[in-house]
Image (cartoon, rainbow, N blue to C red):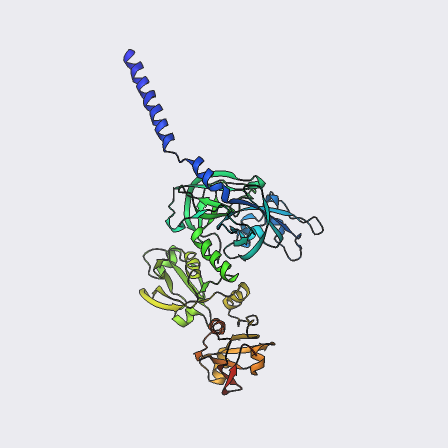
Length: 474
């Protein structure tokens, strides 16, 4: 009996030592929070009550009035727990969110949906000061917004590299869930490069960190105290945390922030294909070893894909050196390429691997994309610098006027185009020595025009070609 008691005592001692050793190996969140939390801010907005006639999705606001970005609203359909939005005529709601300070002179990063439609944005600092913020720029496609407050010497965060994030590593979030400032939650990375909806340009970081309404826009830290993501959304059936949280990678967010700071808007690359997932049966039918890649079901007219020689039925397996495992991998890979740059597109065609080179275009807006995917002619808004609306040539117009390239002028407003003598129906085939192939390329050439001198423009009018001088400034 005595021998048994000693053995049990030894086991208990071993267990106690193991527990102590395990506890010592847990991260020191105290130091991390103490060093990083001063740069985390609370964001509140005052905004007009939504017009139900123009905001049919208003009923899908989260608890506390936080508005959801369009790409996530389908997650919440049919769940009565989500509180309805205010009716017209009610007092303007105050939306709570989070953000973090990038620079000592007051640049702050948060979510687009936190400040969307705001009439006033108020930032509350860790020292309890409240400052009105200017919205430098906001990008709905990435759900990123850049703010600026008038202050100096502010505490700032360190930014890391989300490309180095690994599944299973510890992460920590600081934010203002339900308005409770500087609440801290921790967890691990559950997945990386997670796509959540069609046409999204964000490869999200998925975590099990407890995130709730009000955390949106707050930072996700690694154990080195570096921001690796912006906490953006949760998947929920109740309006609260259910174990699935999603953060915008900081690499993506900083690319957007840099463009917003420089120009106030964001440009993205565009290939011009409609794609679908490759199922097991489709993989077999196309002679693939496994179901992987993005299957091209439509190549849009006058698109970079068409110019590169992509065809319906091609399976894109690599883009610019990166594997395309799921079809959802392609949009954010293309979107990160600057318009005008070239990229290699590796496709499986007729069972053989081919490499094509595409000159990436400028991503059109949502309405233009919808028209192009339906095969309808593009109808770009008036070019603000020339005052023109231009569209691609139809095949019938190309044949009638014996043209291989050019864009059709469909509307002439006041501006340099009108002063140069352009009229509806003119076809612009060359500008400042550059052959005009597509609408996107036309806009790129226009943006690079000199302002201090006239440039030659070749047009075709009722089948007759001529050059006219174009000058931006009268």
